[in-house]
Image (cartoon, rainbow, N blue to C red; front, side, top):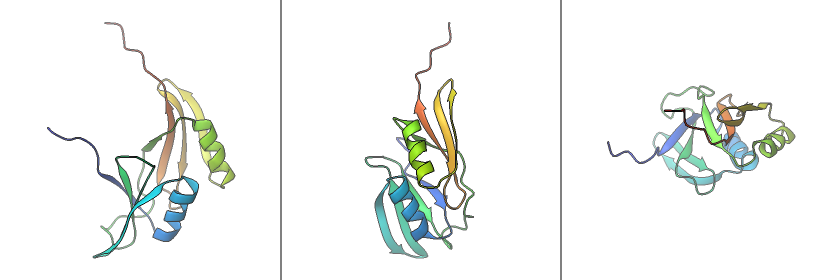
Length: 128
């Protein structure tokens, strides 16, 4: 296999402009593509410098249901500060909690897609 990375993750949304405001203004993502293409608008966002982008897939784009995406992990250098920023923006956040693999919290975007924040912790190898 010669796979190098994931190109994009689809986030089904009901309103692309509303979702864009959340991902750009609340999460600080950058717009990487905003094109009119059949059958609709191709809108992608990503954290600055990220290799994988998020496609904000609106109605008519692939038959996805808004809010069905789950388990999307976003790595941060400071989960506590990011949780405080989300809460200040009115986003309900669960956590953060200390876990063996890092400090982690979860939240949902405006459509109910499930996202998580993690400040990773190095794992120790099991004894051999």
